[in-house]
Image (cartoon, rainbow, N blue to C red):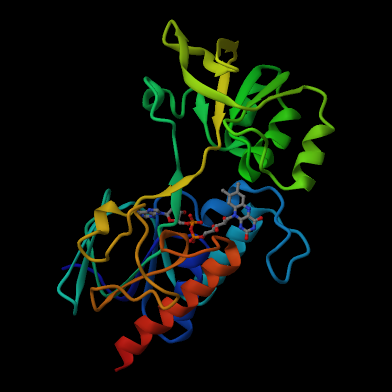
Length: 304
Ligand SMILES: Cc1cc2nc3c(=O)[nH]c(=O)nc-3n(C[C@H](O)[C@H](O)[C@H](O)COP(=O)(O)OP(=O)(O)OC[C@H]3O[C@@H](n4cnc5c(N)ncnc54)[C@H](O)[C@@H]3O)c2cc1C
């Protein structure tokens, strides 16, 4: 027989773990399922300075603290990917990639966003081999090597500042006329002497030799150029990954769940929270707020 929970939370980022915490504080049997890293996207940030209560903390440490707090309150957590959810409005079945399905009286979907790619030839095959998203995770593969960073916003600069201390040369390719990262980040990167920056570029493709990436082909001032490199880091934005849940909760044209801060969806016992929903500010503070609200809505339904 399927294991049954009052609340199953899909995603162990700030929204999901806060939802878990609030459900547990309401005395609900709660499970949080995470497919990759507890803590969510924020673990990629080595220094976070705008989480209330911490002057500065690494995203990794913050993720650990959130998960420990959920476990301390008696929550169950485990690693797996939720592949599908079915619900009749009373009881939901949550299907998992590696384990047997679990059933839940309520489900809170807090799946955040995933990294956007450029959709170029061979890109999918190279992701994880020579194309990466996270300097903390994969930067050390490129010690004293040449790397290209594609992107020019805050995420690109956070990653580039870390990479510049590891690699021999870092080339930044931005498609806009200027870099859009915060001034403070731009000043930090300007201090590095091994970084070359290009704006108004368009990446056309990846150069491959013997199955390995060896360069990036791009346009600059209408001139086609190739920059040789050993690896590429992509920071060109984030997109939601909600398609598999669209029968339960409506999506907007960009794929975000259409919902307000209460996380209510068209399915009575399915709630959404955090970066995966339509909202104007995607940050840890707003994700935590969403998680708390969605959990209280789920608890109200369970208590009714
Ligand atoms: C480099 C970087 C720096 C940032 N810096 C800051 C900052 O300084 N301050 C700040 O406030 N915010 C910052 N942010 C934004 C912040 O990290 C996000 O707003 C916040 O993490 C959103 O939380 P979330 O729980 O909604 O989603 P996420 O953090 O994205 O968590 C969602 C989780 O769900 C999991 N998941 C997805 N689908 C499934 C599935 N099918 N099954 C199981 N698990 C699933 C994912 O693996 C992920 O762990 C930064 C983001 C990045 C990328």
